[in-house]
Image (cartoon, rainbow, N blue to C red; front, side, top):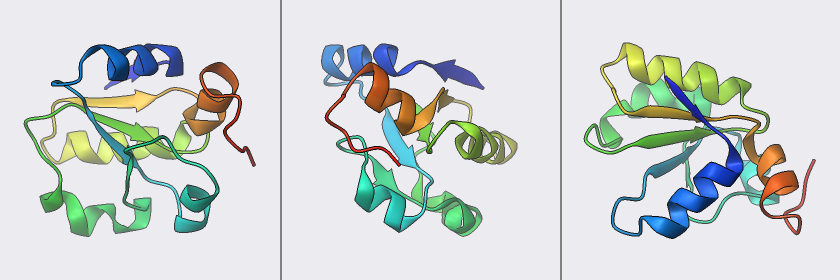
Length: 107
């Protein structure tokens, strides 16, 4: 699994409009409602095993959580199920708020 820092992801999202990754947010709905990266798809971690079929295998998938731990484990689950283009957002939305979007609420 690859890892990406928030500033690198922000640059990627601005630079490659046609090659954007799927932003997969594996937090709980209340966390997503509090704050999320624009365009992120919510799929709480506990629902992931039953919903793998909804995810594209041909795209890069950036997995997101609060600090980067749940997303790491979710990314490992994806890899164990044959997903090859998995990237973990190091530091999660908390780091995104600190490094990219200081207007984003934190918790």
